[in-house]
Image (cartoon, rainbow over all chains, first blue to last red):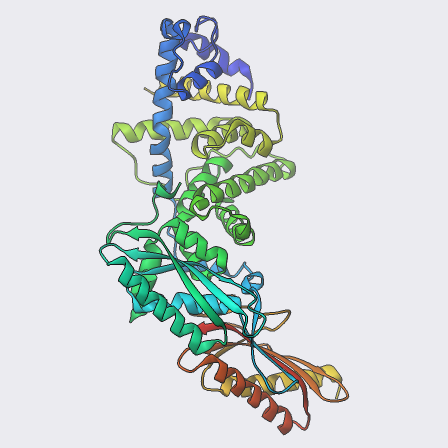
Length: 209
Length: 188
Length: 112
């Protein structure tokens, strides 16, 4: 691709500095992106610049539509697509520390991974439809039997639930799961309510950005 | 069964919650991210690659890399832009490697992989004109434009990704914008 | 019988015994600290594991070292399940005419 093809057309439409009273498209783009602030009289007072700015602005406004159209045009996201990706990933690094069970016999080394315990904590959400458990952290030396452990959990709860009561129920349920299946000495369970999801609200919007 | 409502809640949950869980190692949460952002990443890859053939490969590789690098994601809420940066790097690499291996001119004027029926509304015609103009751009101009306008990357980020100075990026962007404006004027 | 063949045979026998424990939902590939818990999710999505011995067995003069990674059901206390698995491993080794010198059982996944 060379300039020869471009130039005749560009001169007609006035996108070169001689058409823009000495300014360049690069400058005008910056000006546009800055919201035309601080105001530059030499640009604002130039008809050539105004035409170019209009064109740049029209172009910019089309981008979201292009992205939306492209997104709508792509194929289905079916389970075989998801499976193909999951088969390419390895899980080992997520296991975390190994949490022991006591054993009277020296030959034995019995334990459960931190990853599995986080899964247990997440399963508490099954008792509360609409609640989603997010990140979960075990603070303390979980590898040492009897060492105090604090559990920190991020939770997303449905709109309308009285939060203190729900938090208490959740704490109780999480505590019960940990007591039933581990020998951890859980001294506290801290819940952080991260998001209050409305019943029909999708999570997949730009809000989080 | 509770399973269905639970799965539904996770599917609708905020990026921060879902990404947070994926960072913790929850494969189900990662699958939610895959379903949620595949369309956007495919669209992005399509514009960057200018052809449909490698789009799925690039997006799959991007997700595999994303899983490996999730522990590096400091702000789970920003997982969307983080994913976009990964796919744009992969797409740039793919374009480079294609050029290195191809004997023929591989700037395909290919239609999108799942072409929709002819668009009649004026707004759609304009978008189609923009898409067509993008396809005609040289690789480096197009990449700059896509990274800037769709990816929202800074000039520094683009310069780093393409391995050129920022002044070059500005120059490529200006030429791309001029070309697009001219072509779209012709189609009015 | 070559040692590796013996190990493979033992691994298969032990795997069966472990799977026979009621609250064991799955056996995963052992190695380092943990097995492949992705298999749990993959199975959940319907992909399924291919059948190769997943239990890690090392035959020595004094007996065998065994390492197993399992998924457990939450219907029973996991601590109990783990001990049942360990007992099943002992029994399987005895039946095969050998002794367990060390046994490492790790729960990598708990299913509700």
